[in-house]
Length: 161
Image (cartoon, rainbow, N blue to C red; front, side, top):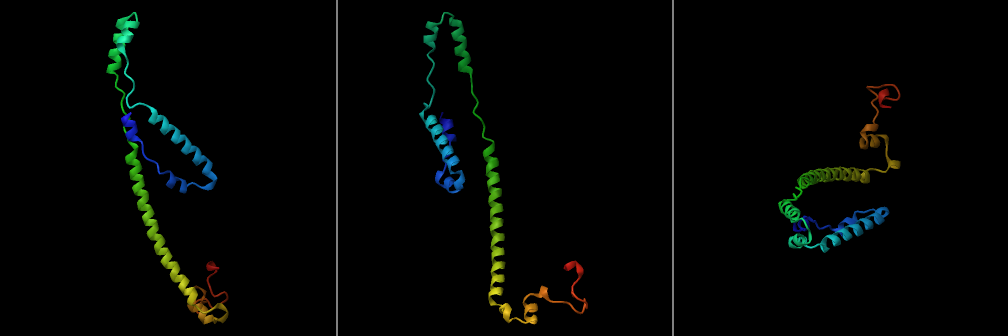
């Protein structure tokens, strides 16, 4: 029982509840209720199971050799504890996810900087109703027409239209 109690992990239900969408709140409450019930049942069990009174069975059962055989087999019985092989895999996945999240945050910061520069450009440019064609072509070079290279309308390659 001590091994089972040591294996229990504390669940931060408040942090868990913050991540649950409103439409799944009922399922979350059911999960928490069930988890609490299982934890309470586990806590109610004794640390060690009750010992078997072999002397009682030897006096009550006619075949003492059978009781003796059961006693030796029971004392030789070893129930193996399951080995935790998944925690290391989960920890490795968590580290990888944290690395990916950090890379995403760094990329997002770079995009935010780029977008802020674009926003500053749009806030500082001449309003469209006051722009000339030269101002438009200077502000947005992709709108400039190359009349030398493409002398005929639309002054752009057909593939760019």
